[in-house]
Image 1 (tube, rainbow, N blue to C red):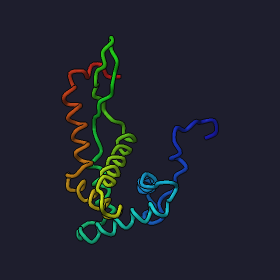
Image 2: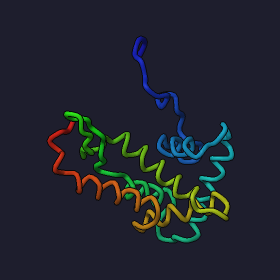
Image 3: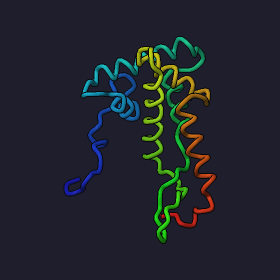
Image 4: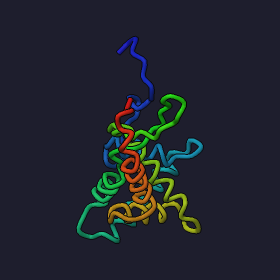
Length: 158
């Protein structure tokens, strides 16, 4: 696709080595700090092993997918300036941003669980999100509540 400008490098992303899945590869990239991909992969796969021990009836990758789906927000508020006043306008979230926010909130909540290794924190947060509880789900619910509270300004949508 010569001449086409990409806003991200996702088209260069290779599937992860275990599940051959681009979404897993993207999540691992989000876990990664300072370019340490092997460390990020180990954290993710170890977290899935912990989930495998806890949930016998389902595959851990299915638990991960369901957890991500549970965290994905449907609406968010965006600031809009109209006539000298700022309004929080609820807007529907597109699919790519939904996924990005879900990953960000899951990792933020996992990193916020101090005192334990990241693999354990990530497994705990994924299990919480799978069961529709925990920090990432709370973040999603807050976004939805904010959008609901500001739905009177929906007519200012972009």
